[in-house]
Image 1: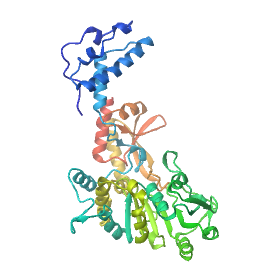
Image 2: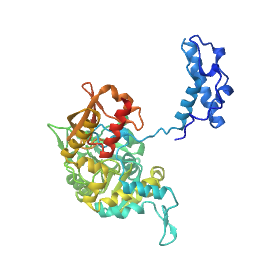
Image 3: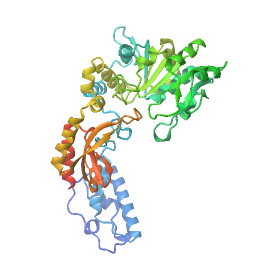
Length: 450
């Protein structure tokens, strides 16, 4: 980061540096005078000086002291040069933390994305034939190996994948979906509101807690285009419930000659109890399966569609696909992440999300003990969460270092920022979502704040 804190041209006039308690507006320097106090690009310095002087005038009018304007200008310039999107140390115990960017990428994905970003690539060029190629080809083969699907397509997120599926297969027609699966995802967005933008008409079947295959069968009419099943990835309904098995829905769809689309939400290639895989969904009879790349899969943000080749091709040819397609960095990082799954043991070692989810609690406790010893904190047993709208009932045994809650704000505003959990008057730094190296960084950050 470039700093503008050095290079002041001589001493500033007293009218810039210091003020009495009763400063008047006429005592403020001009923009040009204030700009001469720093060594920075002129246009940037002028804009920053105007901001600083605007705040100074407001402070004077309210009876306050505008303070050291030269220092304020340097801070304004430093802030302008500082990146807004920054690395954060996640000490919350939420592994796939949506607000903190979801899945941290494995090193192999970072290296592949850097290689693709720093040079030209064969993104849409077939090296064998010397003709135009498809960006989808770079992930289609490996997705076939991992899921058994005939074809695959990648767009920018899973909501886009489902919307494209409905637009490509059911625009202007009816889509049958269980009333108990019309879920709300993050930031107040509801799946029905997103999906109607596809041009399809959603028809609710069954009830909130009980939906059977027969409910879909009775609702099928001449305008029905497909059946949609949405996995309850971010919530569970318990008690007096019933959900139609996917294979039963597949039999209904096949009998009527209709496609069945299964929205898995999180998606997973590793084994998690209660979380179906794309391979299992296809084997049960789904024609298309949609899932995310940056949740349990542990890769970049992406929406992945796998399934029957003729249906995937219809989606690929739909005009909306062009607006939703993934860029070369996503394709590169996703291909590298998927390749790790060809060796499951390697995937668990090298994909951060899998490592955090499967790490033994004793190792997490040892990390928390080291952190507590370094900062004078206490070890507290906690429960970590998967997050990201995945496995909502899963509880991961974890351990945190507990310190004074007064450190929460300075740690959050530090460099790098540290985000923990406030509970019962203490700040908990959960060590399931910290590596050993990151825990050492947290210890250093605590020392600086103190």
